[in-house]
Image (cartoon, rainbow over all chains, first blue to last red; front, side):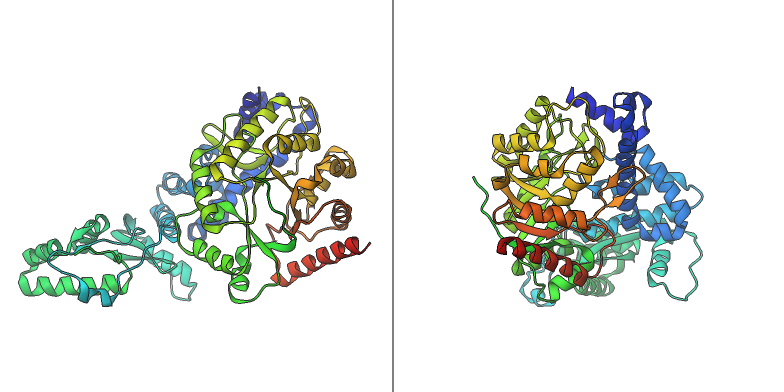
Length: 249
Length: 275
């Protein structure tokens, strides 16, 4: 009995089902409308807060229309509104096939939000380098690190939207890119990677022996340039807080 | 296990005031946070909570337990809440007398229950499971409601009393919610208060509301209005030591404005004690 009532109430919230509403008293309409308004307002607020640059890019009216369609198409199923936000980038991409930047911006914003609240980890600092046995060391990226493949120059557009500068907005263009996302201290960060570094960072995310990185780079570039590249990358990864303190070796 | 009493005045921790709470000595006796905002793996939210906890006792206030769900409560939710409870060692852990979910759908909304014997069984079973999983007794808050069910077999206060009798839970009394529901459903707020087991009230919320087309709406986006202050004074004549707080969820004003409202709560309380 209670379960059936709650199912009917849920049907009212999601699709204003007349059958569902009929089970409530005729004077319940005003109250039902308040609950439905609260339901949609909570989801809309979640999407607005999670995707501010996507909203800026699309414009308020188009963003709200997109969010409303997403709310209609995919009601939330998790207790966490963070989980609800995770469904939105795919919806945006589907709704705006001629505006690929919009879907990419939403994907980027979601990844940054996830990194923002991802697991904590102590990053490796430069002092740790002297204590590591480099022949045996396994390097691992911090747990918030992940790679995204985007089809447009959305990262440059995101940066321009954030900076709110007078600089001209970059022209949207097809520009496939591999983006590294991670959190440094309390700030979610991203940068573009070339395919070679992206291949190595993908290994770092799972954990890889430094000797394996060194071997690949020497094979690709020769001993001198290979070792130099490995050293440069290692320096940048440490400066960026990308490497986890717990390297083994 | 009975919930210890705590007497003091606090505020809900909201984003616009994070810097105030991290960098200044805010004159509150405790802080309440929305549990779900901090049930994340790590990052700045957890860092802020740890820092605030170093300065103040913290109460965890949830919105997603869905204690009235006929299909039970979410096991993953309880695991995550337990982890937060273990880290924060909160003053209180609370949630609402409402439901939010059915299988495959979560409304993120505090939905009303019919006050029936069946619903009482459901709430008590779910709350018992939650308290077991958390290893502590919870506080349950009276909701604002916009709809009453013909099926109801008892009043909300009778229902709350029965839940508390059967599960041992304490009560978080939201005075604004009593006022909003009393106006919307035409009951006497004094009768509501009189019907509650007031010795089990451990915390009080004060907030404002808005006038909708035909109903009062629990928006928590305005200062506490005179009728809620009057009902608060009525309640404070009848309860023991409690944690009183201003709960503002939207249109968040500068911290100073909320501290002024909190001072008003202190004044009302001290006048009642003096009388």
